[in-house]
Image 1 (cartoon, rainbow, N blue to C red):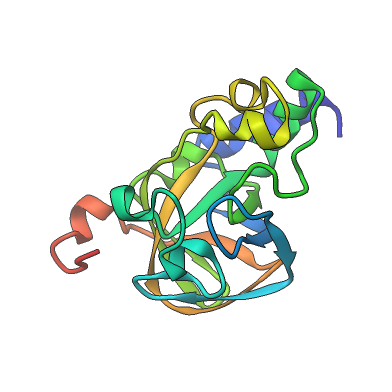
Image 2: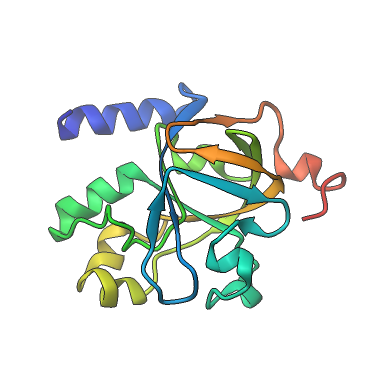
Length: 183
């Protein structure tokens, strides 16, 4: 797929065409600063994060200050960063738990998504930080862009697998459901 096809597909999804994406990768780290490791299957734990990951264990650097349980990034952002910086960060150096494709970030804002058996809710944007430049190479954070990353909360736990469909939950804007779901 060339750059034009990638961009036009992304724009179609942004305008509301696609309602599903795909889980491309699951990555976990035991503690803050430890290397990410790819797994094929993980268990999302309601109110905590992914079993075996630093955020669920409370050992992530920002866990107590921002309440991020699971981090997500789009495969399209990783491809763009590789073109811009020449540094490929597909091996987990992007420091995000989930890599998805097929949905635009704007579609996820204030929404819930189902991946495998688990239900996640959008929490906030998680911009790349300067630490990425240390582990992935200078200029990586800038190449990813300030909207390359999201924080999610686990609403309903369950098993997720690489290859699972990432589905927007119909008509579930967080504003409308916040009274029922205390995150």
